[in-house]
Length: 367
Image (cartoon, rainbow, N blue to C red; front, side, top):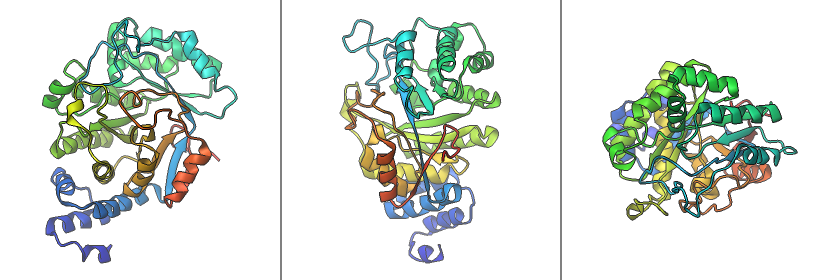
């Protein structure tokens, strides 16, 4: 690290680099400066230091599949390409039996996790969704069920007349094992009014995750970036996550989600470059010093970009997916039929110079 420091001309960046190498937490001001002033090579080196402290040379993946119950949604967020109104030829709604049939397709495969997330359907409460989880667990008890974004949870729990805490406890009894990170978008309230005004507030998103952690339900966290936000908004978002993680230690991973421009009302904005993607991964890894994992969701950014991200702080490649998600393909992702074998994931990881480690949903290695 001393050799690196002598090549950093900027005094402020050198002080930040010294903090990072000395395992000292950086401030929001430091994070903003990294976004604004640090070149990509320096960010990769600094993010690599933090990455190795958490995970050494390991890069994780799991065998998973998705169920997307419906794209009918009471909300119409401006960035969303997934939402379709009732009657639209591209809308869908699966019954319990149809969703169980998806689970049964994997009966002879070594999957360990099902990820369930979709639109906020107006008709169903937590008991409807909870009974689905119960049926899945009855069919395959060992399958880890990661289900329902905080936005979905807010609606289904409220519709059932429960408090957030009681609702989460009930869902856990039904079979909920963990919660994905969706619905966070960007926490700044003014920006939320502009891009997802109807959706649950940032405060409620954080409250739901805190309550889940307190009741033994771990979760992930996300941030939607590359739209109308700026670096200060991103740092504010990361800071709120870091603060909650200090309090609960309940987050498993952070997943930056890139805004994709196709088929939504914000398409005129365009998309940020891969350079910005890598910058965002690196600063996220550095800033979220209490998050054990940073994930690159390859169906969103593509396999090659996800592979590159491993050199910018990322240590998790998500999973095999097996062509079971449409959220990002509808928004224009080049990974139109997202699926990778374990051999393909391992090859991508090894080519990037890292050690592939298959994991379960809680990051326990699987031999």
